[in-house]
Image (tube, one colour):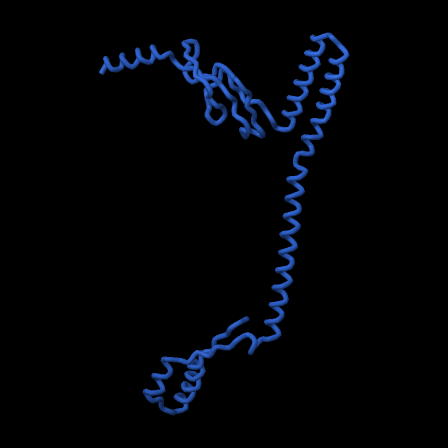
Length: 207
């Protein structure tokens, strides 16, 4: 609904100014009334009923279009999530086929070395498939401990490695498109306690 405000005082002032120009004097009472004009409220139904109905109809159409748009976008997002892993799963199926062949071959053969060789080939192919999907291993042993990539589960006293260096890995960690999806479980080097105490005493003596 549209509302228009008409100021009656403005119309009165216009008429009075014309009378003043023709020689009709304005008294003080009329001047005071001009300073406090009467506001007249006019509704859209009284003035523009047809235009008002057109805008209402257009609003309803736009609202319906927007609701349909939201439904289409929701369906599209659900379909994207549903089939997002289709390519990865399809690439893993050949690896599954190879596993089945190796297992069946191992049942009919007593050659343990051949079985191990076949498993190593499968593991290598599986890693290549993961790499092509954006999954890579996190470097651990020999690297500086990074809490964003590594999870320290043990500290190892040693003089052979710099403190804070990773000296062992208990479980591999992985990145997906450079985002850590599983941190590496590692062992971190630390100085022996007697060496730490020796350094502490040395600093105290220097002070």
